[in-house]
Length: 299
Length: 338
Image (cartoon, rainbow over all chains, first blue to last red; front, top):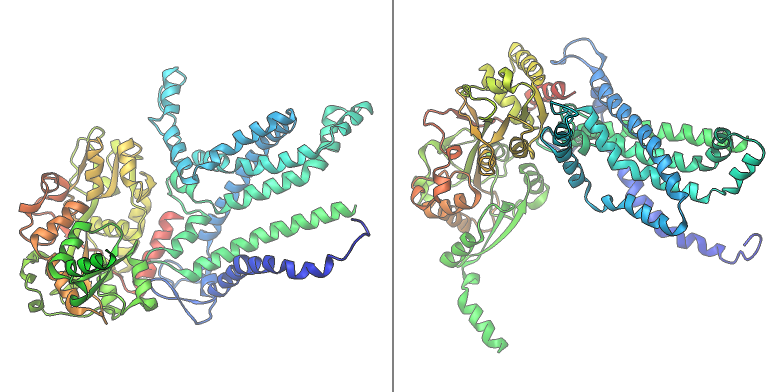
């Protein structure tokens, strides 16, 4: 099409209108609502009053003791909750990358006709609702579940491994939930990789490690980055795995925000403010990535 | 043929003459046969809309649905909130021929003293259960949850619900609900933080499952849930703690601006009939607040230990705290879960 027929151009704008409507209604409008609500006054027992205030952000960052009359100090409670969730999402992303990359590579290097079957196998569990899969995982790893009973039957352990209600179980749940989001984009990138490049590198006496680092990774990197974002962002807000597998003993970002919107103790502005802070953090990460990527592209 | 059917249906239901009744009710909380019976007896056409939490019902009514419905079925604390928000109408005891059927202990309830706007629907309790295979000692105190014996440490599930946890914690310490006393609140905060090290998990929907599966050996639980856990084979006993446990009650309230006030009163009167109240109890497996239901109850419900606490068992409704105090309770709850 290069330099050819441009007669479709005048049509582009009207054709894009539905897309703008979708983005506006389902993406911009909710964010805008959230931003406005975060500056409103909490109404007792849920809801908001239209008085603008910074109270929600003040509650997030500043503490004045349990009874509110001590000198103002930095509130670590919510920062701790955020940090715990971020740390967990980072570990989950790293694990998914570690397992997802070889998996994607393996699938992409199968003969074309069997790739479909492998991809099918990866996606099959995801036809089942996430809640049911998470509960099932709990059944498997509980003290008298098949995993512990099996290990005890073959004599590897004498006492059941305490897995349920630990951070390890939460990690397992997150990893299991989000692995395909890592595998699929990397697979798409590897599939497009021209393996003649590897052969050329080998012909030029590059070691296999050098080939991977200098030739393969730069080509596959966009897929890996897309995978990391697709895993990190939902893992950050996840609360099914922490609640069901971790025992809900500590708030995660997701459950903290959830708590603000349900029940009679709800605090909508605070929930909105926490969401805005979370979104700002994610945006900062994405902007840094976009900058790094564009700098690399220019070099 | 068509004409014939129409005439037949008109003959069969004199409904339009007797008017309508609009009920705002919980999901699956009234047997259809009972609704049919009411329609047949009175000729009133009943429409039921459902909600899934007290809070969503309150929000819907405040957002403009008041005036659409005649009656709703809020929980105890929500009756009080709706009363303060001006969403309820009042009636006189003489308006209900069956008013005297209300169990005397449920007439002067804290959330509606003297029953001016509400009648009892069903009630139950929230306490705790212990797996008797794991622990066979005395379970007559809330210390099982808050200062557990060695056998139960690390094997306790508590409800993921601020109201119930803070209320039971207050009973355990012997301090009043919605206390604003600093020393008492600090003590409550410290006691809960210390107890948490012995808890395995927080979960409300899962409260029954963790007892049945053995993930937890003791757990805070609703009496109906505990009965189901027992029915599913877990050797659990629902305790009668000496400090008291939480009692909850759902109530039929007369809404303000009810379009069919007279029919609403007929319906409330209908529900105070022991046979009808027992039908709800047989369906929902909680307890009726009406006297004389025993003759109409199914045996397994009449004899369930969870529904028949010792006569001297203390039960308290959860109080709805005022805004200032609620802020402190929120802070304690966040402290506990941070």
